[in-house]
Each structure stands twice: as structure tokens, then as C-alpha cells.
Image 1 (cartoon, rainbow, N blue to C red):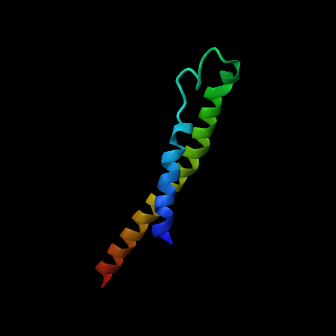
Image 2 (cartoon, one colour):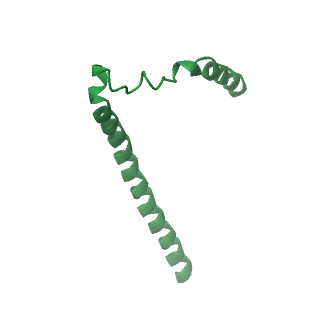
Image 3 (tube, rainbow, N blue to C red):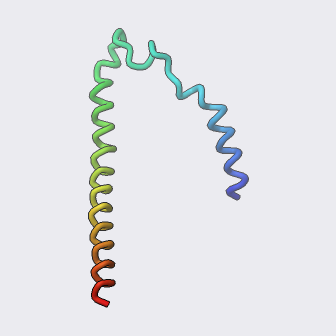
Length: 78
């Protein structure tokens, strides 16, 4: 099933890739009043994405160090 879905997914990405590109005059132009809050929307989005992943990374990093230290400690006691 995977071998069937991969070419289909690549084909869809190639066919619709031109829809995700925005011209520099269209995305974030200073003349468009709708883009007045664009920076704040982007800052909020980046913050909402970055903060949870940073917390997750720090948690994984902390417990990985503890598990490595406990394995070394167990090996020393044997």
C-alpha cells in the first residue's frame, strides 16, 4: 500500500506546488490594508509552534541524560 501512495503523493505535490508560492507583491505587501497584522500573526504562530517543541526538547534531553547516567551507575555497581 505504501508503494502505491508514495507516487500519488509526489504527483499531488508536484501538480499543486505552484499554488503555494506567493508573489512578493501579493504576500506581505505594505499597500494592502489586510496585511497590517501579518507580522503579529506570524509572531504568534511561531511562538505557538516554537515554545511547546522547545519544552518537549528540553524534557527529552533531561531524561535522556538521567537514563544514561543511571545505566552507567548500574554498570559500576556490578
